[in-house]
Every structure is written in structure tokens, then in C-alpha cells.
Length: 64
Image (cartoon, rainbow, N blue to C red; front, side, top):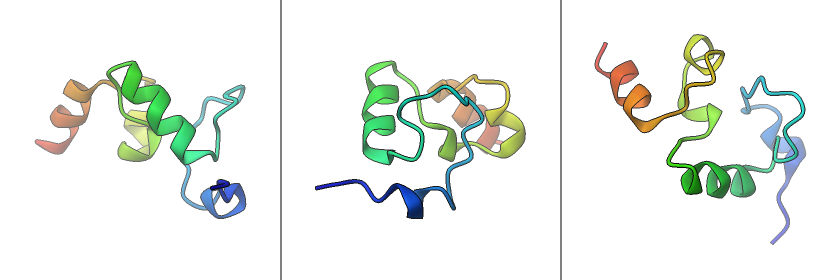
């Protein structure tokens, strides 16, 4: 199955420009999962810019 990156551009809030997985949600999700993280789309714009994509940061963000 091929990723439809044009549709993903509308919802991707990743600010890491050199990322080769940008707009390729499946690849991005698997990459961050292996790293014990979540992809940018799980975070608000403000939190995403910190590049702290840890699960603990996600939980902290959602306790507010």
C-alpha cells in the first residue's frame, strides 16, 4: 500500500525539515515507536517545536 503524502500534508505538523519520513505517516509512526516516542501529530504546535516527543511528555501535555 502506498502512502498518500499529498493528503498527509494537510495534517502533518512536523517542523523537522530534513526528515525523510515527512508526510509518510506509516513510516513516521514506526520510526518513533521504535524510539519509544510519538510522532509530531500527537502534539500541539507549541509542544511539537520542543522536539520532546516522549510518551511522558505526551501524558504531561494532556493532563493540563
